[in-house]
Each structure stands twice: as structure tokens, then as C-alpha cells.
Length: 99
Image (cartoon, rainbow, N blue to C red; front, side, top):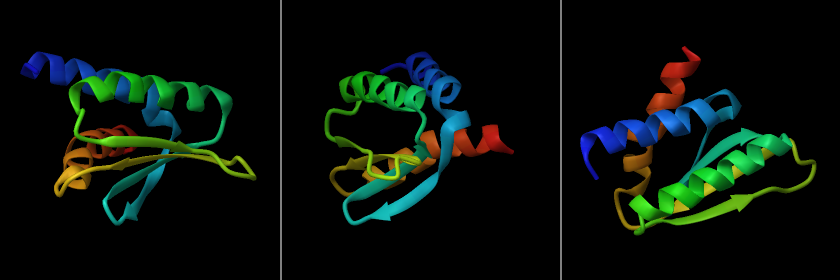
């Protein structure tokens, strides 16, 4: 993936998910990204996973939605370094948008 493709991918994720981003949770083998639970967010998270699996095929993605449906969790797991990779890129871009 070229640097331009990385930037475009990050911008697409930021523009669709940053407003819904609520934080992270630690996971033993990765990271959990927490978003709000509205219907549009669920579709946006699924779209992100659909695109992301093409570039980061080493990772496993799981969308978790449980009662009372106030949050949507995206669990990303994989080999050592997976959490750091997503923290350094995706999470930082969401947090810059919040600030």
C-alpha cells in the first residue's frame, strides 16, 4: 500500500467513524474500539471492516453489539503488534479529530 493509499484509507475511516468514536478497551490479543450504538454507526463499522480486511489481512475483526445497544464494539485481534498498529494510526486520527 502506498503512502497516498494509506492517507486516503485513514481519511475515509476518520470521516465516517470519528464522530461516533468513544474510546478503546484493552484486549488480550489486540484492541477494542468503542463507538456509539446508533444504526448508522453499525453500518459504518461494517464498511470499515470490509475495506480494512483487504489491507490488514493478518487481523481478525469482530463487531459486537449487546443490550442495551448503547455501544458498538469493534474487536481487532492478531499477532503481536496488532493493537499498537491500530492505536498509532486509526485511534490517533480519531483522537486528533476530537481535540
